[in-house]
Length: 468
Ligand code: 5AD
Ligand code: SF4
Image (cartoon, rainbow, N blue to C red):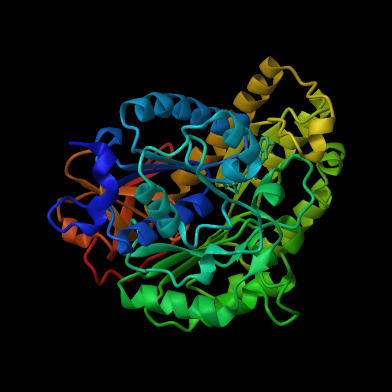
């Protein structure tokens, strides 16, 4: 087929609909942004492509948080340069954090990229793509569309609630951007200042999601527990949780990611009092060393982190904690790292993500020499993962014999099994071929801990004794 005539396809009912291929890198926020982009393209008559070969539009929704995430995109763009030579009508777009961060470089050095759109400018992505496709392939290379900068939020458009990967689960943006000064982090540069959505808007969106079959939502924000501070004193995450708790069809409400400084007494009360709020909290500590925390500008000490966790556990002992950690931050000594291990040992997190420090140009830390050798970073990474693994396995063992309510997600990788999650976000597999259970809540007795997940057996629906 002659690709250069593709631009006409969307208006010609006899030819096939134009196809897009969208790949998402990075955090949940990015995945949700990708859903938004998909919903715009679907509404404009586009269909998902099978792969690069049948795609008319290839979009990469990118992440800048670590060099590794960026490298994957640079190498994919190398491959796309070749593809574009073969298919000159192809539209190639870089979206998200790298579009914001590297707009000039991409415009100057990558003429095969037609579209550069930052995370605050997705609202009319379909029109941007259309403009490029209508233009055809005879235009000068490098003559594409660039939309970056902050202040325009993708959320200003009404979300199409039907576009989502899971029938019963959905992510919901409650705020964008980040105002924190963490020295290592590129996010405030790529996503701009905090902008919270009003409670009424979020409730309305969640109600529409519930009408469409959703029963679990995960609220998203870079510092989700700072939600609302740009909207006035009365607008807080605790109040939002209470408002959402009133929606009868909503059975689970989770939220990520929290910052230790905003774990307020009001939020702890909400966690203690609202049973349908998920029983885990993603509360990254990043380090257990006060010197490193200070250099990172995290705004708390290890002692303060511990105190906050004690306060939380006193009121809501069933909440499990998840953390992120950065090893090999500039200047991190063996003693600093030992303090990190000590904090991890003491708190006993249910889950941790460990990252080797990766200097990000433009951040405060980028001016400091990245002096911890990669081999040391790798070793610290290994040790911390090992400690976490021990805690994960031990905690999983404690669930053996308990009955847990599982929200069934679908078939597991092992044939004859289904998989789902507990209210603590733990993965549970159980024997069943009844795929109609997907989206339902079933009681499961935990029989075995499998390292990162649990194995159980399904009980009758009316089984009463759910609990750990
Ligand atoms: N290097 C390594 N890890 C980083 N993170 C953020 N910035 C960097 C960086 N420059 C980690 C933090 C954050 C998680 C999303 O990514 O741990 O919580
Ligand atoms: Fe990556 Fe951060 Fe952007 Fe998410 S917000 S895509 S983690 S850089």
